[in-house]
Length: 251
Image 1 (tube, rainbow, N blue to C red):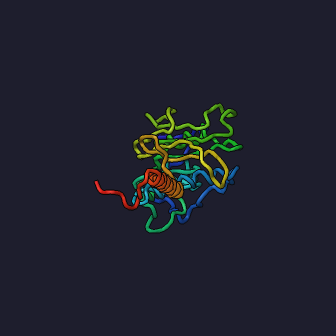
Image 2 (cartoon, one colour):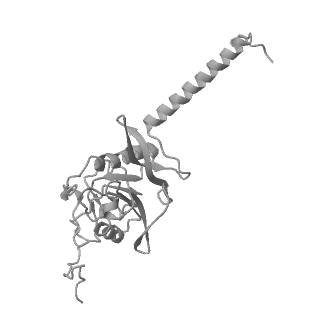
Image 3 (spheres, rainbow, N blue to C red):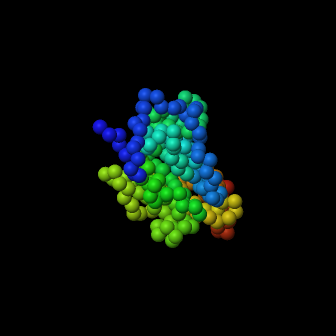
């Protein structure tokens, strides 16, 4: 029997699944520099927010610009490096330590359930090559964020694809609810560093955006201030009617 061939017709050597390298032997990333600061900032914002939403859970991992090694390609030493990915059903810290990279064979075969790619000035196969890699790997949700170059690429600024029968199908709706993850994902407008900007965020099933701890604290402070203002207005009204708010007659 002849060995299988890759897309270019070259013979592929079988992968020795009994002697796969460990993550201690493999590079953490592909050392490809990002084109802009948002490629680091926005995925990390999702990570920080998820640390708050799932603070009590220890069965998930969110990687940013980290190599994902797998056995569905030509060579298990050649990773795919998404801008971010989410895996569920794995340890937050593997063996109590931070991961250097993510090797599927060291994670009990758990592949990421969600991958995020942010399109930059230099196209890197987000709509073709990487899409094929993630589909073959079995990544259920593939999110492409392309706010600057969507017109160039003839795509929408924000797209969510779901793997159905081995092929990615573009989904509709934003924020998009991913039932298998218990999260929705979409865009929002926020103020960051005193500047307004668009960023990616997590949403609940009702479409409500999860707030950061800082936003929750600010909202609570606003509620407390509003309650204090209402109390002061009521007291002022009572005094105007000849009542002492501190010594109201009992009913």
